[in-house]
Length: 188
Length: 188
Image (cartoon, rainbow over all chains, first blue to last red):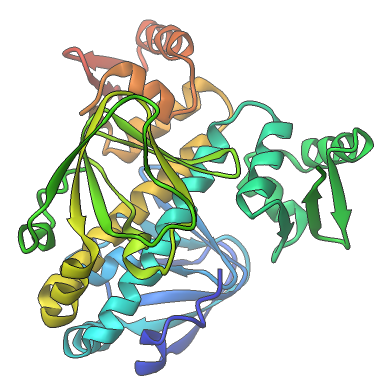
């Protein structure tokens, strides 16, 4: 999930932007000015009242704005948030001038695309136990979360309570082990 | 969803590969040789027994294989399928030599990433009616499917029956209209 592996961002200086809960960062129809990284809090992308994506701390968002004339969604701070804005114009100049960075950016997005597609497949499974077991299996049978359990529940489309209850049952059934506070391992 | 908008694929000749149902196209651990487009049927990407992604006719898959030493998943034909294989080596040469094509590929992946993320957000909604209404809203209030209703049900994580029943109820409640065989519109 690390964006540190994206050398493109080292080539263009970013600018910190602080947002209060509910504040709008950009609106649908506006011309995109930047690619963003969430440093603290979360940013919700919405269109026509429906949520497109919730970007959490550490994640980039607005990749498609680099290549679009106008935003097709609105970005709103979910809570008090800090983001870094990397200017679009500078990024595009760098991408066009440095094929290695452009290929690196494509590689980075391909990995994000794999992740987003597998997130969706997990969410298509019925039942909390299937989703939890699939998420651990897809991580190679051993998953160490880089987010709180509450955030993981949200990613899996489960309530906090359903996640806790199901993890407890899977541990009692000997199907998974817990590793530390935020780790899980499939047994057998 | 069209891949015709990806000029990169015009720069490298593809090769048709026919697969019978259940046949393996590539296996986890093998060196990637190509980027693939599904022309007919479906290809299931699996890892450790869990499904990562089901690529349907018209879609590309294996983007991350362009940039990886080995596949981290196995690709199996869901049914009798035809795919076009675009050789990895040729694609990488073209990407590095033609910044415009590399930026175009990045733009194409950014759009796919938006789509995959919003697919996941829709799947996080509880209940068939919320998912159906959100999918139509995110398409601008009017959605014309480019796939059969059965495939759309799968994308929404619903059974065929639940989709039909819920669409019927939403139409009866005056919340959506049907447009032709595969279209929907939100009313009001």
